[in-house]
Amino acid sequence: MADPSVYDADLVRRARVAHTAGDLRTAQNHAAELWLRYEKQARAISRKRARGDEAEEVLGHLQLRFIKWVYFRQDEPRNMIGLLNQMASYAYGDVQRHEASQPVTVEEIEDYRQPHTDRTLSTILDRAEIDQLMSVLSDRERLIIERELADVTDSEVAAELEIEPNNLHQIRWRALKRMREAADQQEWGS
Amino acid sequence: MDEREIQLGNLLAETLVAFDEGRSADVDRLLDSAGSDRLELVEMVELSLTLRGPSSPSSEAIEALAMTPAFDARSWPEILTDARHAQGLKRPALVAALAKHLGIVSPDGEERVRERYHEIETGQLDPRRISMAVVDALGDILGGMRAVLDATRLNPIGPLSPDVSFMRDGFDDVDGMVLMDAMMAPPAEPTVDERRVDELFGV
Image 1 (tube, helix red, strand yellow):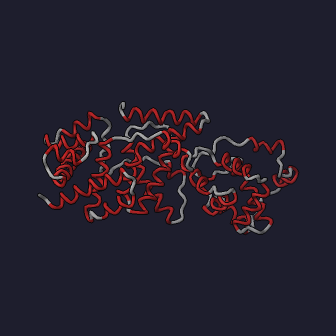
Image 2 (tube, rainbow over the protein chains, first blue to last red):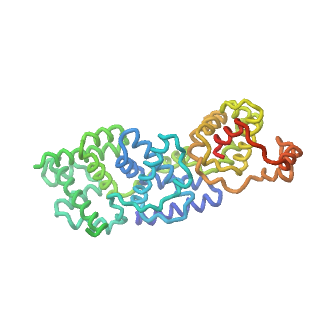
Image 3 (cartoon, rainbow over the protein chains, first blue to last red):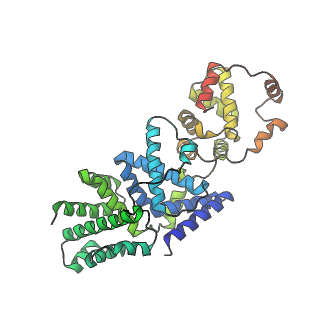
């Protein structure tokens, strides 16, 4: 598939054009496709904000904000993961207001001016940037991550490397931690 | 080997499988089992999913999700009008039911409900600040529409309804002469019920 960010931007553009033209069915389909592309990531991001049932509530408010953003905003999506992280922080506020019986106002739902400051790999946009982060890994770590990206099962990778699955999982954990640290350094220059 | 790293590595692998299979309860259980390392585990899950990139949903899944209330792109005036017509309800009948649901029994209170509802359905009153009591009541009266109304409450209301031309042409359930008299009179102090209705409608 082409660069995901280009595909995402095209979906958003087509959803907004269809909405403006009154073709709501098409607009809804494009918005739904965009959400489904990132639903798993949104579920994980919601769980950084809350646990259990409350995390599901955050996810619901995050989805609502995401849909309104697709239909009614003008800005182009540059990075869906960064956008979802930013929306999740507001969605958590929505949940708090809801629990306090305070309806979410339009000013609150349209306010995304506050910069996103969470630790997140919001710089990852394409394969080239992933490759750049993977340069910090050893050959074995890189192979494990590449196999995961290629949907190779853990048992197959463990067999290829002649290691136990436990060992594979530990190496992958360490590799991801190193990639995260490298990404943090790229984002904040620390 | 670092035992904790092995545990977290195994939890990460199990959590990703649970994510892939849509087992939310298992995801939460696995994340919580990481104890004080829960947040780090969530971040590793997020990183793994980010590295994988976006999913490629089926057209069936897209169309099914697109028809859920959250994705409804219509404005409240469109939704209310469509739903009222679908229920075969004239506006006075809906207003009477709405007043009853809200516990408004006085004639002045019911008249204020009529005015505020008319303003919402014709796009003159923004639904974004109305109370959940009104959302709940309308959802019930219009036949299980609560989820749709709640999800679309923040949608822009769009251009004013053509019905707003009642100022010139008259309106089915509005007596034009009475309306003109009301406009000429000095504003009266709202009654208790009128104030209550205004609060419910976020005015």
